[in-house]
Amino acid sequence: MRAVDIIAAKRDGRELSQEEIAFLIGGYVAGEIPDYQVSAWAMAVFFRGMSPAETAALTTVMLKSGAVMDLAGIPGPLVDKHSTGGVGDKTSLILAPLVASLGIRDPMMSGRALGHTGGTLDKLEAIPGYRTNLSAAEFREILARDGFAMTGQTKETVPADRLLYALRDVTGTVESIPLITASILSKKAAEGAEALVLDVKYGSGAFMKESADGEKLARSLVNTGVAMGMRITALLTDMNEPLGNMVGNFLEVEECFDCLDGKVPGASSDLMEVTLELAARMAVLGGKAADAAEGRRLCEAALAGGKPRELFLANIKSQGGNPDQFLEMRGTYRSPYRAEIKAAEDGYISRIDAWQVGHAGVGLGVGRNRTTDAVSPTAGIQFRRKGGDAVKKDEPIMTVWAKDETSLAAALPALAAAVEYSKTPPKKRTLILKEITS
Ligand code: URA
Image (tube, rainbow, N blue to C red):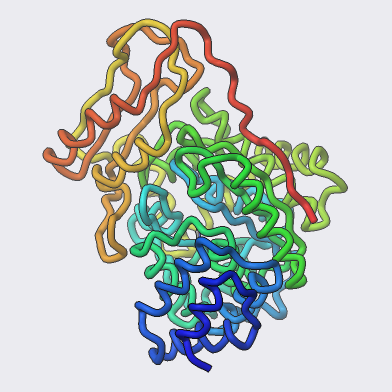
């Protein structure tokens, strides 16, 4: 077999066999097939797509490129959630302790910020001392005790995805439905979850800009997951505006804790709506509720009872942080480089564009352009107003914190330009467009 023939076959629209996919990916991970050939193949897949059988074969080959987390002996149900990525997308930090309080175990293996989207690991590491590089033994121990554990991908898990994702990121091949499907599902299968709820985002701040493409991605994920023996469901959710009222690493952890603490300001209500609907599906897949409506009632009652808040603080301690110190830092752990964005006119905010906020956030220090860049724990944006709110000219809309003076000055015009106004009240956004099941 030769890599060049596999590339040409995909270029010409032929369906590849499992053997051909295994040869290419295996050779790449072993260092025998160079980046430039895999880049050409990824571009051919981008234009030609893959059949369901090819997508499942790629996912399986990627999963088998590394170790699978052994969660045998940990009482289930083991249910996880995964988002395809967005801006201010922090639902994991609320729903992991929430579903853990219902008796579900959530083995959460998350990623870092890349491009305009945020990363759960960077957010958690904004808590001083918090470790996300858990060993397999630590992961198991914390999962068994606290009901959830938060870790990053290890060197051993899905090395094919680590290599391919970095290559796709610099070759314009991220936005490919089969490649995203295999990337996400190979990692989720490797972490040991029995069931999975997917938050598939569409809109300016997502990889899929149109809802029709988001739906195609959701169907590909669900169908491939089912073919691999997973119990899986997906919600198609709107990512045209940032989720919640904070974008930033410590800021987002703080917002999540406030939501667990029962303090949900108006600007966080979209965050809680999406979180509760995802958590409700996790309750159903975990066998705790007969349907999503019952799952949601259980989740709301659990939040009111305060157990998820306690589990969140217990997890900070388990993963190396100090819960008392975290509580004291709330409201004050901010960069000194601060400014306000004020309303440019009287009227309504029709939208604050997620993509522009995400990109400005990278400049402020929230995210990174290269995997090796450092992020700032204290940079970010707090929204005082969001889409749908009435505003008066010069009223503060956002408070902005940057890693330094220069990046603050550079981000402010972009953030001001992200705000769209209307003279009449805008139509209410539909946050959850539909559920996609097998
Ligand atoms: N998230 C992933 O893990 N992989 C992708 O390809 C896109 C989003």
